[in-house]
Image (cartoon, rainbow, N blue to C red; front, side, top):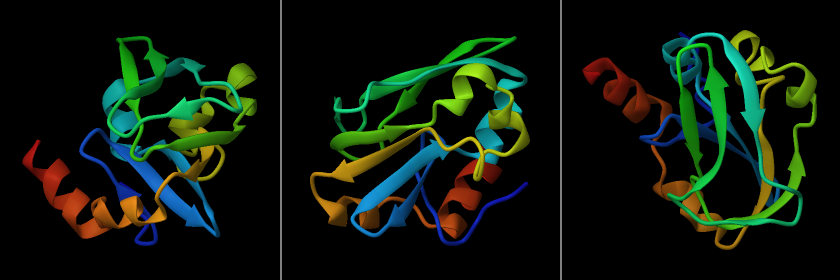
Length: 127
């Protein structure tokens, strides 16, 4: 299972990558493997505000529909439109091709409150 060390993670299995003054968000390799084959991804619109710990979209697999929870609060400045036609990217490439949204955070220091790769690995090993 892939857990890039340069990312931060949430208990709800989202990852966050800081890119200058913005953050890129997706779901983890662990999450996609638990969900199974992803068939649909619902994302917010560019310009939407997301609130930390609140749902911002969902992923639908052959097994279930799962909410996506915002790791931080901020404004959506980009969405991954490739997921409309290719939701399978979530299974194939959760950290590269299947990022979900890019956000301008309200408070960039919120990212520091998220888990490191080591902390996240300990969490998923408990499950």
